[in-house]
Amino acid sequence: MTTDIVTYSRDGDIALIGLNRPDKRNALSEKLVAAFKAAVERAQKEAKAGVVYGNGAAFCAGLDLAEHVERDAVESLHESHRSHEAFEAMARGRIPFVAALHGAVIGGGFELSAAAHVRVADATSFFALPEGQRGIFIGGGGSVYLTRLIGTPRMIDLMLTGRVLSAAEAERAGAVQYLVEPGQALARATELAHRIARNAPLTNFAVINALPRLHGASHDDGLFFESFVAALTQATDEARNGLRAFLEKRAERITPQGTRPAAADAGKKARAKSRGR
Image 1: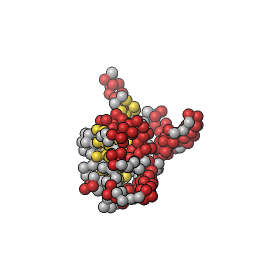
Image 2: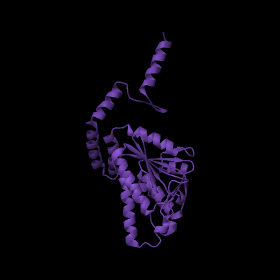
Image 3: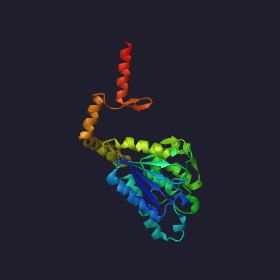
C-alpha cells in the first residue's frame, strides 16, 4: 500500500512503514497521523514485527505547525488525542516495532520514536523538544513515553532550554538503543525486526504490553502480575519447543560477541575433535 504521505511494504514477516512527506521533513499533519495509524493497524493483522522510518532527509521534524497556528484549545485537545491513538496503536498493539532514525528527530517525531519498542539511530540523527520555545507543550505522548526513557530531569532540560542531543548523546540518555553509520539505520532496524519476528508471538505481545504496565505497578503487584505472565507464556507450544531446543543444544548460543547458531559450536567441536586424533 502506498499513499501520498505513508508508504507500506512487506519484507517477509516484517511490515515497513515510511513517513512520506520529504519536502516537509515528514512533519506530522493530521492526514499523516491518520494514515500512519491505518498502516500500523494493517501491520498488526499481517506481520509479526514492524519498522517505522522516514523517507527523505529526516525521520520526522515534528508537528506541522501551519495546522496549529489558528487552532483553539478544544481543537488542539482533539488533535493531541488523535496522535495518542495513533502512537498508542503502535506502542500497545500486537507486534513490536523498531524505529529507524536519521536526520531530524524533533518534537512529535521524537515522541513517535519513543512509542516504538526499539530505536536505531544513525550518526546523522539529532533530537530536540522545541515546544517550550514555541509557546506550546508536547502533545504526542512524550510526557509518558519519553519521560520513561530518559527521565523527568532530562525532559525538563530539553523543553526549557531547547537543547539538541546528538545521536551519541541520545544513546547515552537512553533515547535510542543502537547507533550505526550514516544511512544504515533502516537496514539495521529491519535486521532486528526479523530477529524479533522469530520470537513466540505471545512472548512479544507480553514484552511490549506487560512491561510498560509493570513499570508503574507497586512492588508486590508487579511481582504478582509477572508470575501470571510468566506462567501464561510458558504454557505454549512455542515455549516448550524453545526450551527443548536449548536443552538439546539446537538453540542459538549466547557469547560475549552476541549470539550464534548452535551449528557453529557443533562444527567447532567436530574440528577440535578431528585435530585431537
